[in-house]
Length: 246
Image 1 (spheres, rainbow, N blue to C red):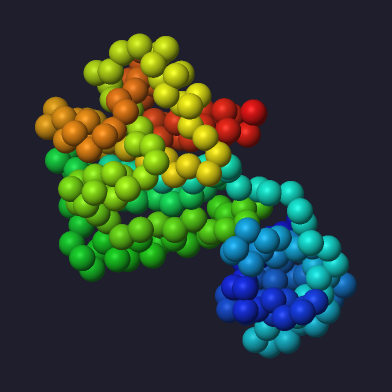
Image 2: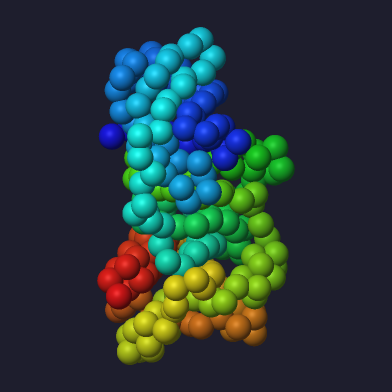
């Protein structure tokens, strides 16, 4: 079933007013009609089963049939700090990370990041990534749209990660899967979790040391070297399985 996002103020009693680009999508792309059902999320962890009551030029009015009680979000808030990759890999990372339950995505400019974005280009990229996040959130029935933050420096990213309950730092030079199991198994519901992923070429030694000094728990993801677009999604998959499987 198709899902759309609104803001809490668009939920008015038993009626939801859908606005913006979604109106055109409902009318002209999906060609939905009055009487058809859809899911609506208020972006504040509340989802509704609705029936289209009226389709107008600038808005769609949907009547609430049922409040959907099932929580679609992960029990912990996962923040993916992704080293800027080459090409359009970031688009794929954003899409899949949202599907796997990420709470927020923070693009990070690291020493080995080949991509260098000026302020104007970075803003356009982030806008594009945010649109992809919204589309992925609709497709995967999320209750909220994960935010894609402005590109941060490595120093800024470390400062933000230090404020979180847990700080995971997968590193190709780390060893011992037993420690990885131990670290991940102790993550609790309600915690905020920072996950740092390097770009192509990974993190350099100084960045790894700086992360340790900031309180990062260095872990391994196995004997094989994973691509940057694989590593973060591997961590998210493991966390999803562990948190939702308890």
